[in-house]
Amino acid sequence: MRPLACVLVLVMLMGGARASVPAVGTNGAALDQAVLDGAALLQRAESLIDDALRSDDTATRRALAQRAGAFYRGVQMSGVRSAGVHRATAHAEWLAGDDGRAVLELRRAERLDPTDRRTRDGLRALRAQVGAASHGGAGDAWWLRWRGVLPRETLLWSAAGAWALAWGAMAASVVARRWVWATRWTAGVLSALALACGGLLLLDRVALMDDANVVVVRSSAALSGPSDAVYEAVHEEPLPAGWEGRVLETRDGWARVALRGLDEAWLPLDAIESIGGASGGTLGKPE
Image 1: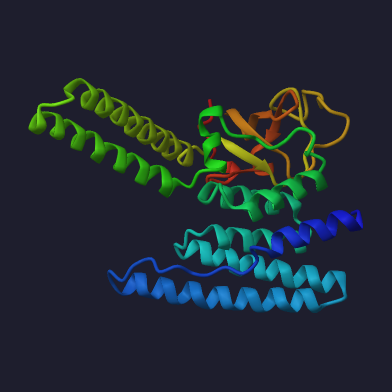
Image 2 (image 1 turned 180 degrees about the vertical axis):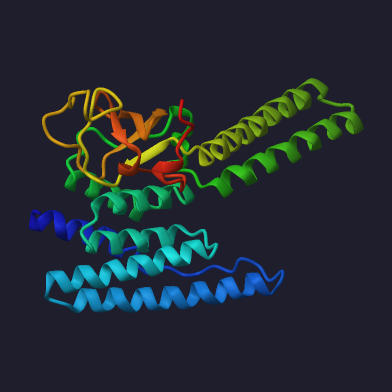
């Protein structure tokens, strides 16, 4: 690994390495216990990361980071949904030498907070490290690219405000009986803006429920068909962990994946993992 790439990735990931456990509610003892467990796991994970960063021995550092990653995943399993926790998990996975899962966790952080610059910079650095920079990531559809610059909350309040102003304009035209066409035209424009914002939020919600976008978490040969005994590899070298793509179909323990910048290829299901949270073994339905 090139020293400059190591330093760059470490800087990007350290920006979000400290995560907090947000309150998830107080409706019952089970929820309270989940918060307490998540906080304890987070504290233990951060302590292990500190120990790993202080260690000069590569094997020791990786072992400590692996344990920290397991604790961070425990925080996630406790019900905490936080981009910061996913960034911290990515930092631990990267320190442990698992570039594939580091990319996976950063993509999950990006789903929760697409506007976070630390996440985007970390992804850019990791993609360069695994050799995927020239091809980019799986990418968003054009109608979802607003997520990288515009917070969801801003879009939500814009939709609500435009809708309220539209009704206010309509009410004013009825009460004042002046400038009727102007106020109704204004109400129409505001209503269209509200519906457009609402539509983008709906598309965003649908995208969050999509499990087809995946990351290669284990280096694997990319084949021309769903069998390593019958089909040949479509690339001379195995596909490195950390590459991203989209599952098109699954069959007999294999997935046909559209890889960004490359042709489609068949990969073992256990070599990929969904950004949406499903492991490769649960992606799609076998034909």
